Length: 474
Image (cartoon, rainbow, N blue to C red; front, top):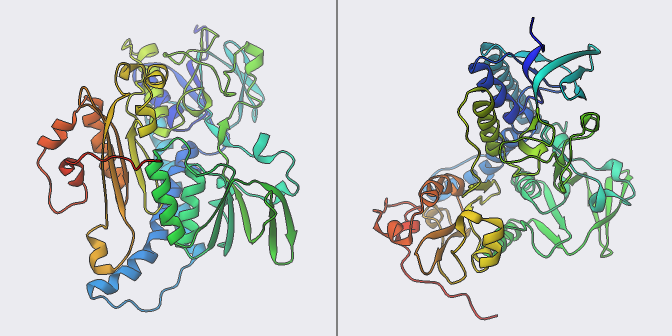
C-alpha cells in the first residue's frame, strides 16, 4: 500500500504549476493538482493572453488612420466593446480547455477547489472537506493585484476602484479612465483604453513610469503617450475616490480632481500566500512576502517546494514555466538542473511597444551593482559604449504618423560584449526575443556588426549602428 495518496500535489494550476504537474507525471509520478478558479492561471485567464488580445484591438485605430497614406479609403468605423470581450472570453475558454486536456492526457488528477496545507505532507481540499497526502507538495499560486500598503491604505472610496482582474470583464467600455500606477500593467492598459477611444490619465507617485527600465525607453514612451493624448500626472498619489451621478471623482494629493468612469489600480502584484496554511508546516516567507526558496525551488521544509510569482524570484510567466520544469525534472526525472536568470528578455505591450534584455545604461555603469545583482556578468561594465538610433519607421513615411522608433545597445568597452539591448517601436518584443539568444551566448558588438543586415527592416538598425553615442552633458 502506498504511503501517500500522491507523489506530488500541486496547489495552483497556472503556468508554473501546470508545467510541473505534466512533466512530473511524464516521469511516472502520481500527480494531483488543485485550482480554485480556472486552469491556466493569471497569464492565460486574466493576464498576458487576454491583455495582448485587447492590445491588438486597440491598434486598429492607428491602422485605419494610416491606410489613407497607402491609397485606401476607410469608411466610418465603430467599436463594440461587448463583442471584443465576448470574443476574448471565447478564446480564453478554448485555451483553458487545452490546458485541462493536457493535464488529463498526462494522467494528472484535477481538483476544482481551494487547497490549503494541513501539514508537511497533507493538503485539505476545501470543497470536499477532505485531506489528501503527498510525498512532495508544490505551491504555484502566483500573484495577486495589490491595493494595500502605500497603494491603498487610507484612500477613502478605494472600494470604487478596480484592478486588471476586473478590467477584463467590464460590461461597458469606460470613456474616462484614471489608472494609478507606473509598471507594466498600468502602462499597457493606458495604451489599450486610449487606442479604443477612452480618455486616459496615468497617475504615478514617481517622477517617470516604468521604473527599472532604461531611461531612454521611459522618456521616449512618455513622449509618445503624450502625443497620443494620454495625460500623465507624476509625483502625486490618489487621496480619495467619490462616486457621483456622473461616475467617479478622483482626488489627487496635488489638489487636482479627475473625473472618470473607472479608476483602475495597477500598483503591482504581490505573492498570493494568504490563507494557504503555510504556517502549519512552518514554511518561511521571504522579505517580499513570497515563499522563500533556493535555486532548486525548495522551501525551508524538506518536501515543500514553490515556483513562479508566489516566490521571492522573478515575476514573469516564462520564468514560472522554466522553474516548474526544472523542479519536475530534478525531483522526479533524475535530471537535475536549475533555472538561469541571465539575460531574461521582457516586453511591455504599450503602443508603441517595448522590448528589452540585459542591463540598462545606468546598471552597466555600476560594477558594484552588477556584481551584486548579476553575478554572471561580474567584471564587466563600468566603462561602456553606447549606440543609439532614433528614426521614423518606414511605414510612417507614407502614413504621416510622427511616432519615432528607438534602438539602443549598451556595450562593455573592454570586452565589446553587448550588455543591453533596448527597443521601442513596432514589433520590439519580437526583435528582442531573438537578440536575447545572441546576448545570452555572449555576443559582442563586433558580432552584431558582422551580421548581414536584413533590408528593408527596422531590425537592421541593430546590426548597422556604428557611431558611438555620447549622452548630452547634464
